[in-house]
Image 1 (cartoon, rainbow, N blue to C red):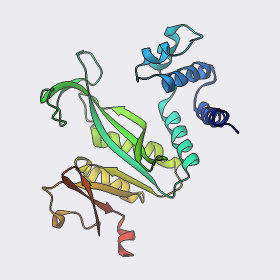
Image 2: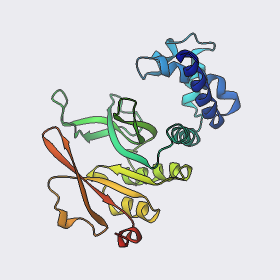
Image 3: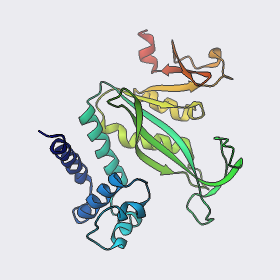
Length: 252
C-alpha cells in the first residue's frame, strides 16, 4: 500500500475514534476544524479556518469552541485511549507542568500579574498573564526522541481556592480510569506537595519528581527509593527520584 493511502487509512481510523466523544450535530464542524489545525502552520483558530476550503460560515467554528459544544474531558479521554491503542506501551508517563500566557486585556479569564520564572531577557519579571496547567503524555518518536503530547489543560483562576495542585490532581483523576497499565507521573519540584503526591501514591501511581540543587537527599520522604538517575541538562545535572506506595517499598 502506498504511503499516502496508508496515512489516509490510519488518519481516518483515528478521527473516527475521536468522533465517538463528539455530539452528532457537531461532528462535521469538528472534523473540518481538526483537519484545519493539522495543516495550519500556527495554532490560531483564524489561521486554521483560513487554511481550508470551509463549507460553513466562519462563526460556526467559533461557536463550536465558544459555547462548549464539545465536552473536553470525554474528548481528552478518547485521545488518551487512542495513544494507548496506537503505541501499546508497557507503562505510561504523564507529565504535568504549568505555563504562563501573556495577555493584554484586563477582562481575560484568569488574567493576573504573575512572576515569570522563565527569566527571558526581553520580558519583565512580572507580567499580566494567564496560568494554564497542562497534562501530557510522554511518547517516543521514530527518531528515538521523547516528546510530550498535550492532552488536557485547565485555566488557573485569578481568585478563589482552586490552585495548581488541585487542578493537577483533577486532571490526573479525569484520565486515570482510561489506562489499565502502570502510570508514572512526572513533574518538577514545585508540584512536590503532600496534597498532590499522597493521593497519587494511594492510587498506586509512581511519582517522579525533579530535585533542585538546594534540596538534600536526607530531607526527602521515606517513601523514596534508593535509586537515583542523573540526567545531564545543559551544564547542570537534574536528579530524578522515584516515589512509590509504602507497600511496594517494603518489597525492595
